Amino acid sequence: MNDARRAAAIVPVRLDSQRLPRKAMLAESGTPLFLHTWQRAVEASAFDRVVVATDSDEIEVAARDAGADVVRTSAGCRTGSERCAEAAGELGPAYGFFVNIQGDWPEVAPADLDALVTCLRSGSAPTATLAVPLTEPERIADPNVVKVVRGLDARALYFSRATIPFVRGAHGVTHLRHIGVYAFDRETLLQLPELPSSGLAETESLEQLRLLENGIPMHVLDATGCPWGIESRPDYDAFLERLHHSNRS
Image 1 (spheres, helix red, strand yellow):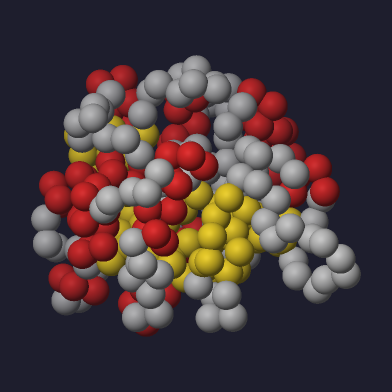
Image 2: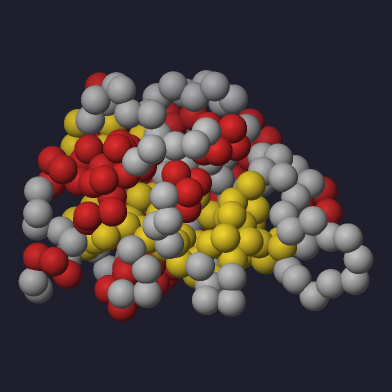
């Protein structure tokens, strides 16, 4: 395949985490959390290479012990996508498309990862992500659940921890929950760390807003799976329960 068409999956992982200490290395399932995510990427068919990107010796050892390819990145990366951009630079021009699969999304569907790569190769947009319908009122109001609003062309209009869209009266709009996976073409990913910010991304603590406020379109695909990110101990416990039921079935 032409290098410009090849795709790599990057799983950015850091050891420090404020809400759930050492989240990436939680292993009550028998496997460190981030390696569940790595395995989902390995199971996808679209990738010519799958790597873990980290600045941690401990993460690197665990990854290599599991057979994962590792790219070391600096400790100065502010976001997962910045870590992916640094890793993409290390991988060189052999890949034209990259998917950033945050290490705390262990249940993302391989088929959805494949769909992201297909979307980029079609030229629909230089970046793409995933979303699923959100119907539970308590989840819609939860600031830890990121919502996305998209236009008729399926491109993201805005992401927020607030309830968007605000429902004032009768409506037919479905709320959408964002899934923390991002696909980029090479040029867009490499320029991301240098993009200026108005402060929106920092205010919401949502890195993807830097793309939107710089006029870079992001296609929002409907996910076939319904994964949840792991942000807290209850999230991790719920993941363990789902994994237990899945292994029994």
